[in-house]
Length: 125
Image 1 (cartoon, one colour):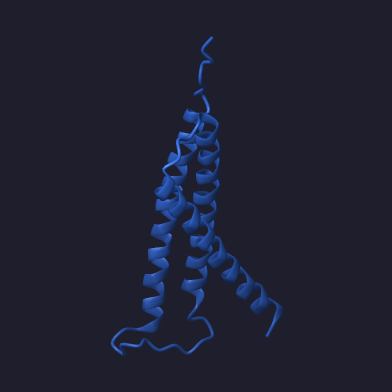
Image 2: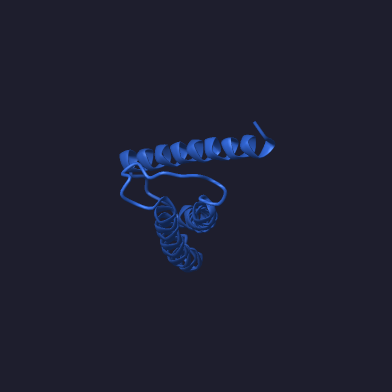
């Protein structure tokens, strides 16, 4: 196995682990429904900004890899009724759409982060 294969396998494993951690956090948040302070919301806004940006980048990298996948490979489609290269191109197009939607979500996450950053709580005397 080449170093590139090792790096790819580690990346996929790391992403799967990160996904499980995010699911656990979301599950805990749903079950406990914590009351969040302004600082918590601001921090979560930063996290959403970073996550959506990172996921958009990953989607675009995967789209490029998917579009180039047929290069130098003999592929077959499991239905035998579709051209494998065309199927890869279709899949890459879907990932480009994912990237666009994640970029739009990232813009909204940034706007949320900025807006919530202006909120504070007055201390009552």
